[in-house]
Image: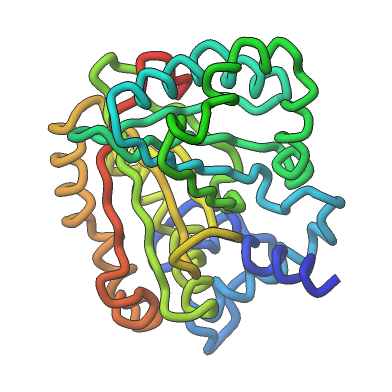
Length: 295
């Protein structure tokens, strides 16, 4: 029960419109109106907790935000390994994952260089994540189509290593989106590390109560937002943005920096980077989709 309550509290947020001096009041029910002498940050935190409590306990195996995300990071060393990974993903794995309800599947390479390769798998529940490997092992068509990759000998491995990151979708953006489809589209994968679990939850609150909406307003097109439940560099949150091209990314980040709502939000002491982010704790990567990627 403690684990369930932690997930509810850590992921609980509301997607509401921003208006004037408050970011949440417009769509809050009467009992959630801002109280006299209640600061805006305290108001937002209270609304989040009360709305989470209204939803009640999560169903077994399902997170309150909606989806969970599996982000696989393949380290490859040679063009032969790249070709083998592409063949495995495009001819065997993606079709099999889709058959399990895991879709759309994203495959991304660095804008420059060979490695690492990122594979994004959106799961409908923790049960989907925990049983996917076993279900794939019972799929004879998948085993046959992926035989070269799955049965690669130790002296000729299919890849150097693979890391898996499990994330819970933010309740402020509970489902993955595909915001761009241009042939030359690019994606930005960003990870924010926090100095403690408490400050990590504060950064998630910042996104859920206001920052995601500011992103959308200025053209920073979200693909997903996830709180890392298992993986490296914890505690952290990871998110992905999509753009038509690099020029759009640069222009819209500039708009974001100058946006008055963002300037107001970042000026709040409890949301200052130095308070909720680890020093040098931001990782920023630009990625390009594989030709067969579904995102």
